[in-house]
Image (cartoon, rainbow, N blue to C red):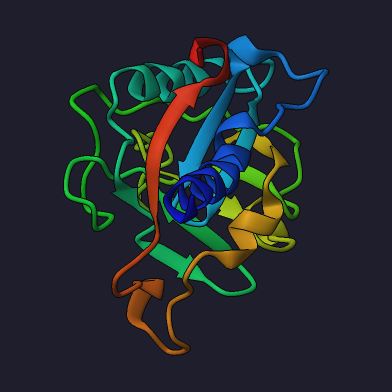
Length: 187
């Protein structure tokens, strides 16, 4: 009897992450679902302003490129960066060529998702992206906005942060994106 109760309790606590409903108005063909070590994050992709970048994110998600990739750079009060499925430390990209910038007038506010790039080249975005913790107006017109968090900012807030003064915001033993899927592909 105790074993049955333990199994039932385990199932009850495991179900919320899997059964969590997506926002009703979400265009599932243009959204990604990140199941992280801290919980679920849902990002609406902005195909209207960054179609090439949104397609790249969906392509890489479908290939499993983002699975088990760390949030390697997490700076409290600024942003959380991930997407280096090649090296896991922010130095890699994907097997695909870099993308030309798709800058817009969208403001980098809390929850906005942008493509990371090398500082010296506006056309160097590839696979890495970041989620804003707070307002980042200094990034406006400098980085491509690819989407916005529509569910799970509380999860983003829980990601392990780099200690103050950490070079580049590097995180030791970082949280990970366990599984990343295009929302329409979830069965």
